[in-house]
Image (cartoon, rainbow, N blue to C red):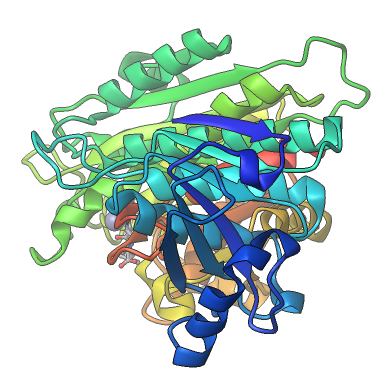
Length: 487
Ligand code: BES
Ligand code: ZN
Ligand code: ZN
């Protein structure tokens, strides 16, 4: 999709539709004076009250060059922020493209903070336009071909914001493409291939540790999960290095769970809903999407992404409940449940990230069903051993409209992971499951400032939203990219 900032009066913009946000309180901007009676009628009939999600279309608007005028509800003016704008654009794009609109212009002026507005608008458009239909040989989903943000000329900052939004959203859609692939087309090796070609295109370094290398290194925890599958595992490493010597010694590590299919292993999952477990690599997809954005936006801090990629399967070679494995750090683990595999692969990646010199770690993982019980599909669960790092992550998430909730990690929860036969057990019993999972990771993060994001509830939409298709959301791509850019 073409995206462009236009600096021209609204009435001169050529497009299939021009969209303008109207608030509950009114009034409409002066450019819409010609349509005053139509707007009046919309309000008095109750057809359009300016509420979020509302949309009305006027054909052949007098005085406009565009063929249609769309008014889009913004809700209450003082509640309208960048996140609301992103959703409003996405909602309008999804509705208008189905009506055959190919070129949409959006009046940006007068909406929220100028630098955030341009970013949010173009993100809303690109994210809303995305359809996970790459494997349909014919699809009824139509698509927008061009999105123009119409602004008063106000310089470099708006240009930069718009460009950042375009890159963020394209990389988020790249991540959604990875996550949407079924497990037969996205094995650990295929994910590694995708990472390699992304890195080559973007100008990043990529290295893939194979099974032999991981055996030499002693990644027994990761390999234990992989051993039940005919598909060999991979530890994917992508590196971004700033061109100029960085001012500090900080080195950000982004770790993403890359389970290309989670059957549960011998502790097998119920059949119902198991097909969704192709999305158990969304954390990995998110960090790869973020790296793609960073290659273009060039933050001043070095960033290394690590994606432990495995398939968790059932076979005669599969790991058994009760097996004891030795992780890269030397700590031993009693595997009481083979379905708690995410943590087992993440901790070997975390230990390796520390060896690579990462000073700060952030991981994203579809780690537990328990976080979905706690937070539903609205907030990502955020856990940390370092409040300062969490503050940075939360600030980036807020800018990007990605909701996160700080979850507790008190020492008392550590007890849950006690094992009679090894250093720790890989599960902590029935209650507080998202917390015991996070505690497991914390054991390995140790003194390294670390944030864990449990995205099991936010990485996938079971039902489409007005502003986003059903399926993978690409959550965390923008937050990770913003975190590194703002470092
Ligand atoms: N991939 C799942 C977590 C998950 C569940 C993601 C639902 C998305 C939706 C993870 O590997 C898992 O199976 N976790 C278990 C842990 C349990 C065995 C301690 C869970 O949450 O049930
Ligand atoms: Zn599992
Ligand atoms: Zn899993």
